[in-house]
Image 1 (cartoon, rainbow, N blue to C red):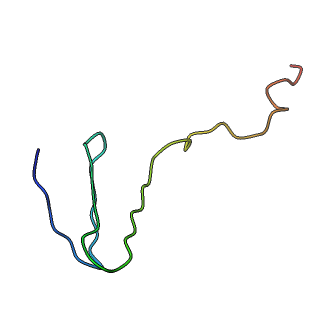
Image 2 (image 1 turned 90 degrees about the vertical axis):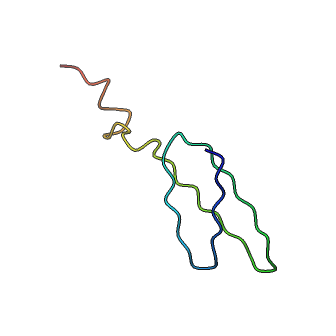
Image 3 (image 1 turned 60 degrees about the vertical axis):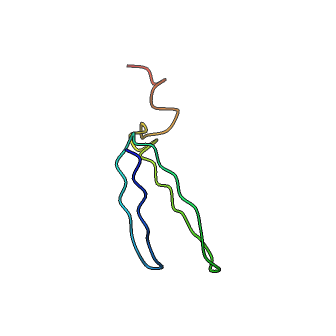
Length: 55
């Protein structure tokens, strides 16, 4: 939707996946935005040599 939500220092936001997101800093303090993506979490383990072993 088109709603904007004001937050203050120390606030925490949990934003749903696949939703448009935007933010800006409107004050004199430092601004931090942590973007966490659920990518590369299901990588194959074991190294490159395991796939090429003789059976």
